[in-house]
Image 1 (cartoon, rainbow, N blue to C red):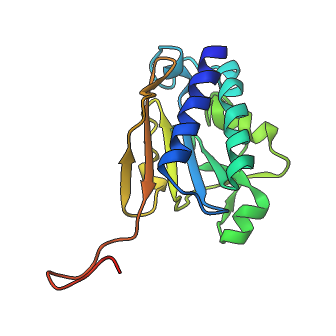
Image 2: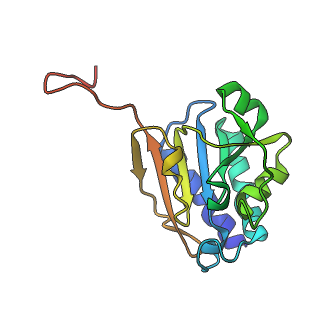
Length: 179
């Protein structure tokens, strides 16, 4: 598990170098612990992998001042675990469910059990995200998503994709986008 934690720490350090996070930026985390251990997504959830990922993520949250939202699996329609105060502040409607490894996924279940006041919401519009194992976080990112590249391409056996977002560019040929 040390290797997974080391990879996650390095990924997060590189993420911080690529993106200037504003305090309270919302970051969506999707993680298939099955994929991390080399199994097919949704088949072999592993709480010990969730724990190995969670520590670095919480340290990242504290260090940067961002807010994390943990995406559940498809069995909960990719709903998200988030702190209750954050959900209320952002006007997100809470739903009634408790993620468990078999319905929600190991990462979301572990996060739910670690957080002080967790709730589940159906949708968010995140400023950036980390997708570990092709969990399809794109539905929770603001438009327009911009993929990011780091030297860390995998966490364990799972492919990793990072994204940030930017405002839409509108206008036509006469429009200007920078001052």
